[in-house]
Length: 374
Image 1 (cartoon, rainbow, N blue to C red):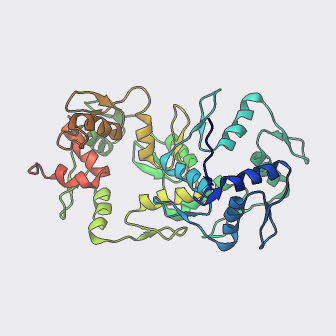
Image 2 (image 1 turned 180 degrees about the vertical axis):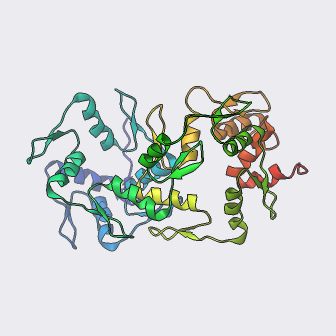
Image 3 (image 1 turned 90 degrees about the vertical axis):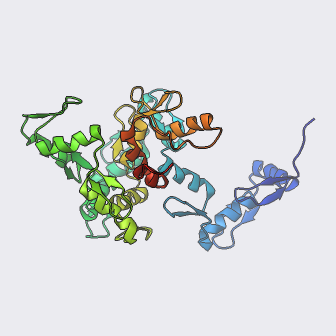
């Protein structure tokens, strides 16, 4: 026996009677217009759709992202935006395994495998698999440069070129050369720098065999093996591998937040956090996995993702010795031993990783830096 619910629920949890929804469905089949917007005259087949549409005119944005504070008019837009922070890509290509955050991106990508190029330029006859690529190409003929820098007025025909240029103003240098620790705002500059470096590497690490051209780089590298953190905060005792990290941390105690995002107004105590916020607005994902081509907006997310590939499992359970690729998975596993209570005192079997944990979990910082605590 089938059961009919007394109402259906719209996207904003408004309730509509079953009969009303059924009538709307029947009129939808006949393409009969039911509801019209008094502001712009747009016609909607359902009342719930009209209510959603009217938010465009009222400016109402009830859905707020707790990560970056961005507001959205529609629940669907909010859900899609959340994937920027979580890195979720639920739509996977059955041909190559590449995944996407939105279904239309997957549908567009599939044309790469089929060879379909339905979008043709009327000027030169060149064809493209995606409409967006055609639009970008047409700017070669029109000379249009719709992307303008708010800082200096420089314009570009493509959004990624503007994103790259924007780093000149923010000071972001995401591309680091590990030999000399010099950083660059653009990948092309890093490649150019690498070509000009001498090939001889005289300083070798006794633990892993990796060699370096400078002794200072080797000293910094060795701290990864020893766990040494020579720079200590006088306020809370937390220690760091680099002096710059200590200087950035001390702003937590002073309350200083000198780095403000011009897009959303949010302020940060250190520049890297501002850079991550800016990437949320621009959609830039500079860190790409070489294994599966998945990309991320911050380096830490890429590192966690890489541990999901076969191989590295640096997080060990102190109870049973089982290893995991990510710290969050280890935490879930440990609750099995503790009966649902997180096991803090036996977090890692390797003591040198305690500080690594404290860096990302502030609540544990005091326990890690004070051995006298239980």
